[in-house]
Image 1 (tube, helix red, strand yellow):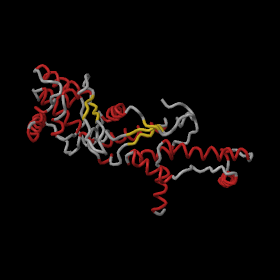
Image 2: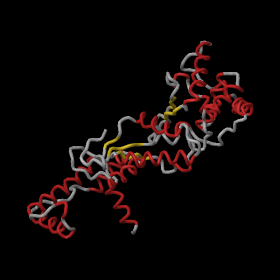
Image 3: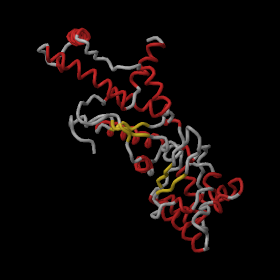
Image 4: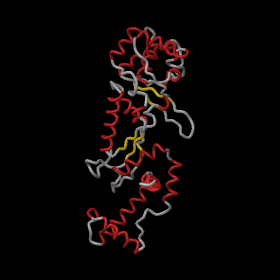
Length: 316
């Protein structure tokens, strides 16, 4: 296929809701013409559909999408990031064929919940392959329910939670607790192990970024047009008491909630963090992963159709 045809296919398939509705009009008009010809629209052959299109044009009932599609596409490109537009392609081609009352595609509103779900899937993964298998399985399962779950294209090579980090289980938590006396130093080491984040960024996490139950913490994204969303990190269950203890320790010392949670355990040039890892006998992840741009932050999800196994059914 030549480059021009590829680009035209890209323009036509990667269209948000308003353009998708225009294409739906084409199918409706053709189906009406087929029924008027006494044919079953669902069983019509390509030749019969071509004949119906010709008759529609003769009757001045243009079944096309209408308007300048190329101009409309460029308008959408200005409004949506490339990642979001790429995410829509699979859904529009694979699932978004329903003709019910729903307007597809539409974004999943709970972005924080999506990140918590993804982070929870890999929080106790024992290897990169294990984490990837869980994430790909989640994508397949979500699509069966009409939900297109789009993860970063570089996911197999990405760093961050579950990918290139140290598996964090009860044994690791016990080892840290037994060998590291300071609750802040212990929490800093634990967080470095399960996030794979850069030490300087770990040191900047404020106390109030940690959820009340210590199950998650957030890192604000950078600014700019391609601004990173707020990244939500799921704290593995065995690590939660360690982070909660560090918070309690600092609050009892009178540290304001907006001050940093882990900085005392990181130290200048991450010297204290490395010392803690040596004492605990735990290798730090080798990574340059930015917390604000961790793999789960740009993940998106779009409703693109109804349940495949319950056609016409409501999405949850």
